[in-house]
Amino acid sequence: MGPSLERDAPPEAEEDAAHYGRRLEVQRAFNFSPSVLKEEKCPVRGKEAEIVPAGLGSSVLFAYPELATITGVQGVIVYALSSSLPLLIFAALGSIIRRKTPEGFVLTEWTRQRYGTAAMLYLSAATLFTLFLYLTAELSAIGQVVTTLTGVNQLPVMLVQVAVTTIYTSLGGFKISFVTDNIQGGMVICLIVIAAATIGALTDIDTSLIRESEFLKPTLLGWQLLYILPVCILTNNFFLSNYWLRAFASKTDKDLWIGVSLATTVILGYFRLGCLLHSPGSSPSWVIGVVLVMVVTMSCSAFDTLQSAMVSSASNDLFRNRLNIWWIRAGILLIIIPAIVIALEAPSVLQIYLISDLVSACIVPVLCIGLSNKCYWWRGFEVIVGGLGGILTSFLFGVIYYDGDVHRAGNLLLISEGLYADDWSVFGVFVAAPVGSIVWGFAALACRLSFQYIQAKRSGCRFDALDRPYGPGFGPSPEEQAHYRQSGSGDDVADVSSEHEQAGSKPAGKFF
Image 1 (cartoon, rainbow, N blue to C red):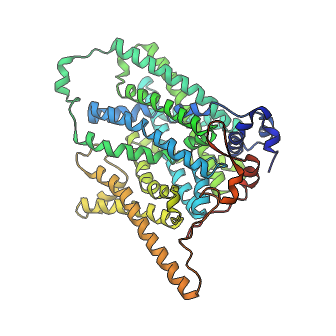
Image 2: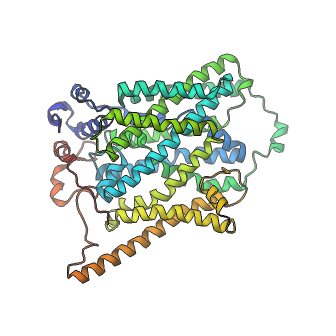
C-alpha cells in the first residue's frame, strides 16, 4: 500500500494527517508516480483557494453575454447569483461526503461505497459525459474568441490547445493543473481589472436608448431562470471532478468553506463583468492583445483540469487503476476528436451547458437522498431507475407539451432551441427532470421492497431490507468510532494510518 503515512507526515503537523492522507490519494489518482509520492514530505496547503479558477474558462465569455442579450439586466443578475451561490450548498454537501468517505477524492468513490459498483459505473458514465460536454464547450469558446479577436480559423486554435495541454498534463500529471490554476486565478483578477477599466473609459452610454432597448424590463424567461439556473448549476457541480478534487484536498471543512466563499465572491463579480463586455472592435489593439493572452491562458488551464478529471474518472472508476495510465490518456485523446468536430458545429456554448445540466438534474436529486443517515434504506437500484426515469419523464413532458410531436420532444431533450423559446418548454423540462427522477426512484423502492419481502416469506428468512447498515459510505460503525478524533479546528478527522491501510479493501455498498 506504499509508505506509511505516519512516517511521511511531519511530526509537527499531526493535525494535518487526515488532510495529508487525502492529498496522497489525490496525487496517486492523477500522477500515478510512486517517486513523486515519496518525494512529497509535507501537506499541500492552499488548494481550497483554487476553487476560484477551477470553474472559470474562456467559455464564460460566451455563455453569460449570450444570456444577457436574451433577458437583459434581470438575466445578468440571476445568472451571476445562480453561478456563485450554489457553491455554498456544494460546500455543505461536500463536507458531509468528506466525513462519510474520508479516504476518497471524487464523488464516485462515495457512490461505490454507498450504492454499489453498478451505481458507481452509472454515475461515472454520466460524469464522463458531462466532462466531455465541458471539453466541447471550452474548445468551441476558445475557437470563437480567437476568431472574433483576430480572424484566425478556429480549427488550428483548437488543435494547438489540445496538443499543448495533452503534452504538459501527460508529463506533469495533475500536479501541473494546480500550477496552471494559480496562473489562471491571477489572470482572472487581471481580466476583471482590465474589463472594468475599459468599460468605464471607453463605453459611451446613450441614456436615450435605455428605455428603447427594454433591457431593464423583466421578461418571462428572466423569471423562469430563478428556478432553472440554480437547479442546473447546483446539480451539475456534482459531476465536475475538478471541484471534488479540491473539496477532498482541503485540509478541513473550515478551509473548504473559506475557499468556496472566496470563489462565490470572485465568480459573482467576474460573471457580472463578463456579461457586460462590449464589442472588441471598440477597444484599443493593446487591450485586445492582452485580453487574448489572458483568455488563452484561462482556457488552457480549464482544459487541462477537465482532461485530468476525465483521466482520473476513467482510470479509477472504470479500471480501478489497473490499466496503464498511458492507455487511459490515449483513450481520452481519441474522445477529444469528436469533441472538436462538435465544437466546430456548435451553435451555442450555452446550449452545450444546458444539455449537461438536464442530465445532472435527473441524476443528482436521487443520488443525494442517500446523504441522509435516516435514508439508509435507499439503494443503488433506486438511484439508477430514478435517474433514467427522470430522462424518460422529461421526454414524456415534451411529447405532451408538443401534442404528441415526438421529434420536437426529442429536440427538447437536446435543448435545441436553447433558451430562446418564448414559452414554458425549457422551464417545464427542468421541472419534470428532478420531480420525475424522485417519483421513479420511490416507485423503484416500493418494487424492490415488495420483491424482497415476498422472497423472504417464500424462503422463510427474516426480512432485513430495512435494517440499518454500517460501514463505508454510511459513516463509521460504533466499533470504528475509536479511530476518529477531534482536530484542532473541531472537524471530525479519521485516523489516517487505519483509513489508508483499508482504503483499497473498502467493500462496495448494496445495489439491490
